[in-house]
Image 1 (cartoon, rainbow, N blue to C red):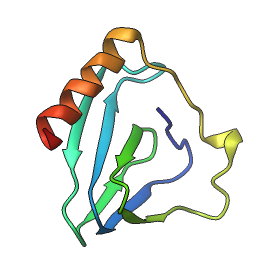
Image 2 (tube, helix red, strand yellow; image 1 turned 90 degrees about the vertical axis):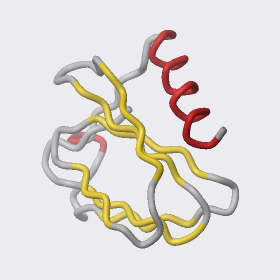
Image 3 (spheres, rainbow, N blue to C red; image 1 turned 180 degrees about the vertical axis):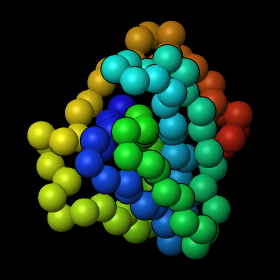
Length: 96
């Protein structure tokens, strides 16, 4: 998962399907939530919030972030095996 330490990031589903995964926690992800995005609805991920996503093959998603959003202010963190299994279960519940 990734977070941005300097800015929010906005997602808009334009076509297809997308699940937005939101992680709780500061230095690591402690719990993951999943949102089945609705078309044309704005999803604002606040600065400092862990997030990731998965797309259907036909998905088109508009992603808006500041020009100065770079690796230096956008750390990544891996998920544990259990967290990865939880993400797969969450996706299965939403997309069957």
